[in-house]
Image (cartoon, rainbow, N blue to C red; front, top):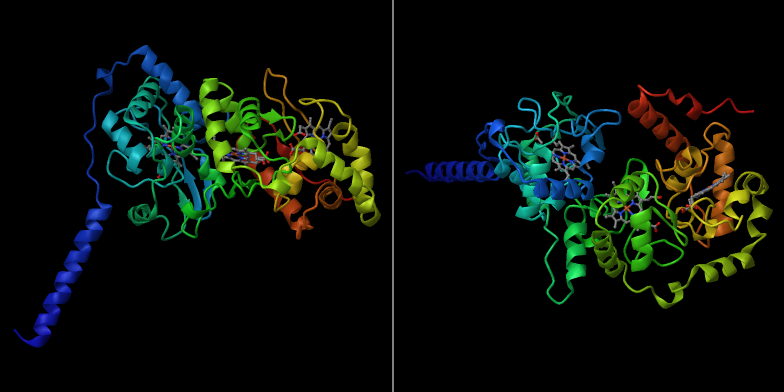
Length: 450
Ligand code: HEC
Ligand code: HEC
Ligand code: HEC
């Protein structure tokens, strides 16, 4: 063989080997369809599956507002475009009715559908991979006993190359499984770790992502973004003025609010609404594990609400001198509720205790002032009016800048006006999509400036 012939042969072998390696990474077999009529499930298993589906927030992504349960077609935004959630009812043609339990388990564990296609990680299978076989079985039983709904999801809106599913296989090589039981810790801690790292997928929102959309394992729980909300750091980097502990976490996750920390809003409001209906022991376990993730506060951060409020008194006056407009709005519009001394849920917390005021950007604060806080149906829960229709962007900017100087020791935010404009735009758009059939979002559009 000539020298060039040898080189060509080696190259050909490399190309073939490479193609085989790519094929091995990308290719997944289809799993046979089954006959939906042949399934029966024990009631207890179905009931257990319901609880698990609640902890996993399945309906937050798979049930559109006002639509049939689990029929999918919910638009999930990503930095690369929009992915629509699948119909996971047992409909044989448009849902997962012909999926065997093995096919369902593979989807949860590896993000591959019955036919062998790779699924986008907006479906948080990088966490669901930690769910046990038994729990997958219960989830399967629960979903297969729901009402079948005939409804196909619209095509995803993703730009090239992100619309190419085989590429997801490459993405999967980069992810790292995070959960291992720790025999040196107690049963409650381990139960909490299993839920947080698995089904409850707390890190899907609270862990920052890299350029490819994967969670940065080295920065677990250091804060992330979701739907124009900041999901705060929930570890040693927490910006909360009063450090979190297991009891406060339990109260907040179970009831949706805590007197030293205020209320859960935006995407977190759905998470706590779900956790309010599951076994309290599971919520306690999550709180115990997360308290360990927060760790002991540093000595200069180890302070209670009284200390924070005493420090605040010493700072009074400073902010109103520099921002008279913001101070006047706060005094006229906000103080009556936030300094009334009335206890939660109907009184607002003193804003010196609010993570929204101490966080690294003003997005959540802008969202809250624009939209207010809606009460939970049939419960004694916090409520605050939204100011989208009664305040201009300029007024909201002034009050946000005032709150930051008056109620925190953190450096001033920059670009507050863009944040407020963006928050209004996003809320109007979200309301339009979600409630197109119910009520027009006219009251959110900014009124003409006076
Ligand atoms: C953060 C949003 C989100 C959550 C939470 C979520 N899913 Fe999904 N799920 C999706 C999206 C989006 C897809 C579609 C992915 C794709 O098309 O590649 C999907 C796809 C699936 C599929 C594949 C269906 C098919 O036909 O290919 C299954 C099964 C599934 N989800 C089950 C669940 C279960 C069970 C839960 C709760 C334990 C859950 N999902 C929670 C967003 C979510
Ligand atoms: C769908 C996204 C999402 C998921 C899933 C999620 N969170 Fe959150 N979380 C948020 C957002 C957004 C906020 C900020 C809400 C606000 O400003 O009220 C938040 C706030 C919090 C806070 C308050 C922090 C502070 O200092 O005020 C805690 C504690 C928390 N989350 C814990 C958890 C735990 C534990 C889980 C899992 C059981 C979880 N979160 C799952 C989005 C999420
Ligand atoms: C009718 C009473 C009422 C008025 C008026 C009101 N709020 Fe609230 N606000 C509440 C209640 C109740 C809550 C929920 C409890 C909590 O989180 O403080 C809340 C929550 C908040 C929070 C979240 C605090 C946290 O981290 O939990 C912020 C920030 C806030 N309000 C700012 C404002 C601003 C700014 C104004 C004036 C423009 C205002 N509020 C006017 C009652 C009110």
